[in-house]
Length: 272
Length: 347
Ligand SMILES: Nc1ncnc2c1ncn2[C@@H]1O[C@H](COP(=O)(O)OP(=O)(O)OP(=O)(O)O)[C@@H](O)[C@H]1O
Ligand SMILES: [Mg+2]
Image (cartoon, rainbow over all chains, first blue to last red; front, side, top):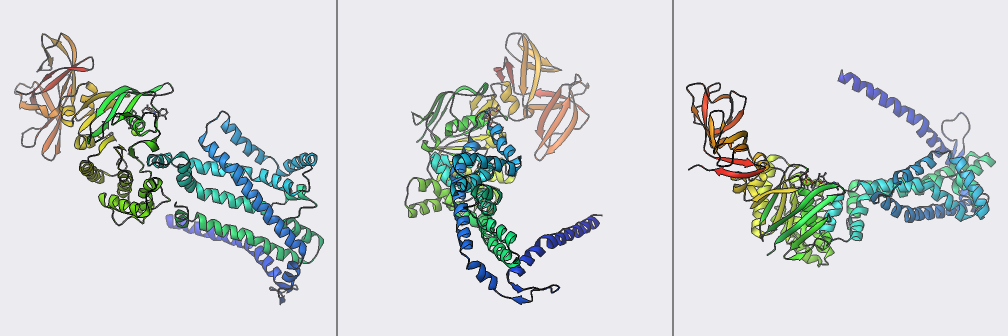
């Protein structure tokens, strides 16, 4: 009976795996192939001519580099600001008990459940009157609003999960309130906070709706540029090369997350 | 060198009275056990001494200086928590050395002290490990070392071994007792295990509902409980209600002396203070159950009116289930209005 059902689960698992390969791995693979294809005629399974011609074409374009710099600046600024604003707030929320706290936390969720596009449009209208449309600041603010939920909820949960007794033990051996935070609370909450920071970075890097509505036409991020290229030109390779380039930051982020959050490395990293 | 005095120390959480104002003197080098059922205020009292709770009123005097309003980091106390509360992101050495580092000691000095502390708790080679790589007992030893390395005046322990199995608990308890005696460190140890308290304490403080019921040596607490609560809480006890008339009361065919005014009273009799002699006329108690506990027999017997008696005898005393016996009581305590008013000891 048990053997039978576990076999059934195996079959089920393989089914899911096939599904994932078909709908995720195959398209990604195709994009990769296109990025390195100079010629690919139907019905060949693989490109008929390989090469880096489109890479040099894409990399030679100043607008690509400008967009890359814009995207990096934007993501770094938003992540840093978000950390500066949200982490103290998260710590406060995890420790303070003020009337209406849960309502306040819920309001974040509610705002996030609201259709995002509509929200962004109404914010964009607001920005018009502040002259923020088409400015870097405007895009930073809209992205900050986007990441607020993530950067407050996750770290709040992380801070709250830190054992009270661990903090008390630190005070007991002579740590001041700040030292408790620096040497115990923060390192304990660090894996989750790091994950939230990385997610904020990646999210901001790839976000298009807000960046387009608030930033256009002067602020052009990588994803916006890619969309533009795919829309305006029929050369598949441009889009493919940009996709692969766009893939790099998130890959780096994921690898970093694995390093930081993978138990041992973390334990030694912030040991203090 | 360090004494601890509590003066009228009380604590309320809002409307909940966790501790009624109480006073207690603990002498230098003494090991005191706070013993009581769940919710009796043991942890609250310990946490007030450690500085983790602010008392509603009263004083905490360490060597005569009131620290009731001093934060924990400035108190000469160290606490071992029930959950060990080791910092999982630091190594064992890091945990033990953290307090020394905060005090600004030099690296070499810290290393030497950490080493000595690890040796003291028998974990000399474990310094480089993380807490996750230790067993439950080893973690508590590290937690103890982390406290001792700071040479506190007062050591506080809140059910430090509650999560360990019986065997390990007994061993660690003995080790703690030895270390404590060797260092002569004044210690307050919270437990709700009476065996634990009876076996390591110099004096036991029995608590119930935020009050001190009795303070005394293990022998005093066991032999001369001053309230029915203590009598019932520590060890096995027969608690019998009876009416006193002209200096004595009868429970079935057993006569208990009580030179107190007439009226209802409560009698406490230890099972080992009862001997059974065969009853030929079928009066007395009928033996219901005999359980063999190694050198002793624990016997449950019943009077015709349903009163249950717990009796404990040596193994070689012949007793059979179903037979009738006269209980002979050699020692008992009389309680009235929740206080011991008279005691009868064997002659
Ligand atoms: N932070 C708090 N807020 C409100 N009430 C509290 C708080 N801490 C303790 N109490 C109450 O104070 C009383 C004493 O609690 P305490 O933790 O001191 O008991 P204890 O003797 O340590 O029990 P246990 O053996 O279960 O640990 C209990 O009634 C408890 O509910
Ligand atoms: Mg407790």
